[in-house]
Amino acid sequence: MSLPIEELTPRQIVAELDRYIIGQAAAKKAVAIALRNRYRRLRLPEAERDDVLPKNILMIGPTGVGKTEIARRMAQFARAPFIKVEATKFTEVGYVGRDVDSIIRDLVGVAVRLVERERTEEVREEAERRAIERLVELLDDEPSVTRPWRPFLTVEPSGDEDDDVDYEAEERLREDRRSVIRAKLLAGDFDGRLVEVETEEAQNPFVQVFSAQGVEEMGLDMAHPSGMFQNRRLVRKVTVAEAKPILTLEEAGKMVDKHGVHRDAFERAEQTGIVFLDEIDKVAGKSGGSGPDVSREGVQRDLLPIIEGATVQTKFGPVRTDHILFVAAGAFHISKPSDLIPELQGRLPIRVVLESLNEEDFRRILTEPKNALTKQYEKLLRADGVRITFEQAALDEVAFLATEVNAKTENIGARRLHTLMEKLLEDVLFEAPGGPDAVTIDVSFVRDKLRPLVDDLERSQKVL
Image (cartoon, rainbow, N blue to C red; front, side, top):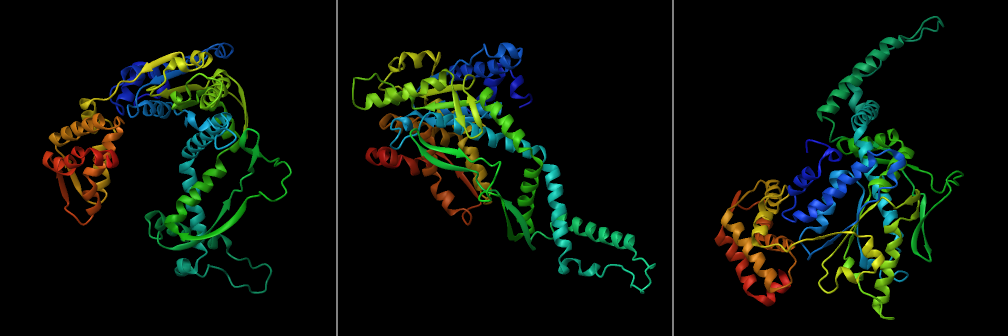
């Protein structure tokens, strides 16, 4: 990506999504506009920003056509906190479900981890330098490492108080010794050596409590700690190679301002957070007075306040949901969008229909995306020294068989390709390494492996 996502036009955002997702132009267009509108809003004077609310999206389409992937990729491009939840998990709140406010609490947690990773990357170079210096100190104290340099250059005391030890010479010798250790450390000469490192284990200052709304996390007042949750120092014996990332992470943690992380994460969750509500069609349906419909409509009414805009208490403080983007999705095979309660329909104004995938789409999915299945298997087998080649005719056959199985059994879209490819390459993956160094997948190979399964309808329903 040549430009940061905030500077991309909607057309350029769609082009980025095309690198990972085949088809579904209408859905890509809708999310690209929503993403760009966020950037446009943040460019407005601060006094005007609150007047511009996000236009939430409802994606309608069968399973396996790319609904989740579009929302997830959009969040990754925008470096935005993203969380996916199934609406059905809230249908039995108080028994096995959770209250809907947990969506926002989880989103804030994702935002904190996202900002922490970014801040850690910013200081990684300095953290690695500090980690190396700590290892130099550790190795300098080991006689087996420093024996060739000992003893220190000192002057034997003569009893005369005016005689001074040559501390400057001693310090120069120490620095020379450490320079050699540092050079060998960077060259990897000490990677297999065991060292004892002291690290800090953070204690969780939050405990889970049961409330009328479900399981919650309650923060303790740490202004006057009793010592129960104070951090502990642990001594671990690891190799130098293992110690490097451990100490780097610890040094980065010391350099990162935790309060700044929480503040930035809090703001990012409020201003750029994205919530993907999957299976929204499963809670659609108007109440008839009793039965499961009551529970489903109750979930809709519980979701409504946070989509409209509410304040949710989290362990990091209260969060406003007014500018969080909600993307709902569902197959709507049995129900239809109009079965949602009117208030919720009004809060999902942008409707996009995703089309079912056909054989040509499957053919393109196998090869074109940046993370295409064939490319994934090529990389996996390359790690074992095996080169695998897919002939185009073989991939055409896989696409044809995927379409056939979807027609005969349940249509699960592109997910069918994952099952077929795993069955197709099962033996190749099992034999590597130790099998042939090069494997060519041709059309006869595909037919021999998959055609018997496809023709056996009863078996197809079980294994494909």
